[in-house]
Image (cartoon, rainbow, N blue to C red; front, top):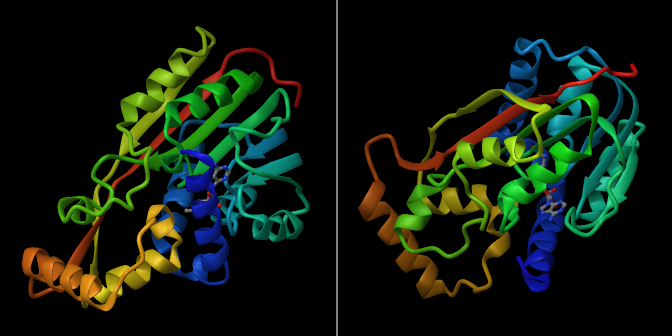
Length: 259
Ligand SMILES: C[S@@+](CC[C@H](N)C(=O)[O-])C[C@H]1O[C@@H](n2cnc3c(N)ncnc32)[C@H](O)[C@@H]1O
């Protein structure tokens, strides 16, 4: 993602920030599932430090704090409005593109949901995160697979996030970080949301900041043509679908924890 693309993503999330939390039901569920699987993998209940990447309005932050405790938390996001999330949770805010900021060192937990798909090379950040863990640290990350918004790709939309990847990409990135890293859980899911009309699909995408890559501007006729195409191709008696394809990885680093 070049600088202009990152700025577009940031502007899109800034615009959708006020309504994002209540519109992003899928992202909230994905965050809760990640935390549940950490628990199921016997992740510790208490951590000295946590670093969360792309915290947004805090779906993952809330899910983590409900289940675990932290002495220190640092939350990162490209969108400046996300500093409010850090404020709510008493965390430090690290603003900026995760590829350009200086990461806090030796973290006990590094976590992220629904963010890495915005990176051209999501595996690089997962690898970096795995390498940044303290001994005994845990990594919990989710992104999206290649079938995310399959309907949009099918219709030729170019607004898809650049870093859709199979779960294996996440596992390989962790394993390449060293023998002391172990993938303890790796999974994916596919689900369809149903909307009354393609216009409702577009509204959902706008409210969740997902049109961040769209460099083009809709005109009345391109919008009408897109919606007609969507309806003709996908409409059923239940309405029109939109596919979600989340992928998750949970990993741990061997060694003695200090907390
Ligand atoms: C879909 S939201 C997810 C927010 C939250 N993690 C959740 O699950 O609801 C994606 C967030 O990632 C942030 N983001 C996108 N690209 C980023 C980057 N390169 N560095 C840091 N944050 C980024 C966006 O600003 C946005 O707040």
